[in-house]
Amino acid sequence: MSADSAGFASRAGTNGTQSAPLAGAQRTSSNSGFSSTAAGAAAGLGGAAAGLASSVTAAFRGGSGPKAKSAPKIKVRRSSKRQAMLTLSRVEPWSVMKFSFVASVVAFIILFVAVAVLYMVLSALGVFDSLQHQVASITSSQNTAGTNISHWFSASLILGYTAMLGALNIVLITALSTIGSVVYNLIAKTVGGIEVTLRETD
Image (tube, rainbow, N blue to C red; front, top):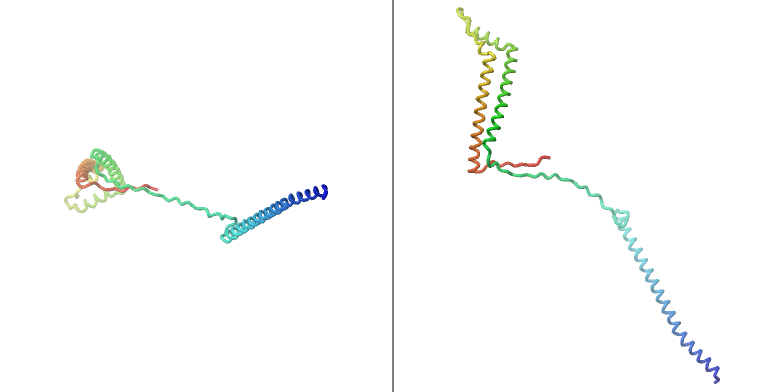
C-alpha cells in the first residue's frame, strides 16, 4: 500500500471518529429541546385549564372575576348607656336649710300673689256683697238689721292673714327640713343610705 492511500485511510478514520460523537451530540440536544418544549406546552395547558376552572367556579358562585367581591358590611352603632348605682350616705344640714328656706320663700310669694288675684276677682264679681246680704237677711229681725260681716272680707284682713300664714310656713318648712336631714344622716350611718341608680341620657 502506498503512502497516499495510507494517509487517506488515516484521514478517513479520523473523520469517521470525529463525526460519530458530533452526530450523537446533535441527537442529544435535539431530544432535550423537544422535551423542554413538550414540558412548556404541558405547563401552559395546565395553567389554562386551572384558569378556566376558576372562571367557571366564579361564574357559578355569582362573581364576575376570579375573586367575587363581597357585599359591603353596614356598621350599626349601638348606643351603650352606662349606669352607676350610688348611695346617698349623707346630706349636709346647712345646705338643706338654705334650700328649704329659699323654696319656702318662693312658695310664700306664689301663695300671696294667688290669694291677692283671687280676692280681686271675687270682689269684682260681687261675691262678698252677696254673702253680706245673705247673712244680713238671715240674721235680721224686726228690731235689728242683721249681722254685718263686711269687715271680714276686707283686703287688709285677708292679705294680712295670708302673710302671717306664709311666714309661719317659712319657719316650719325650714326647721322641719333641717331636722329631717339630721335624722336621715343618723339613719344612713346606722343602716345605710338610699341607693340611687344613675344612667346616661340619649
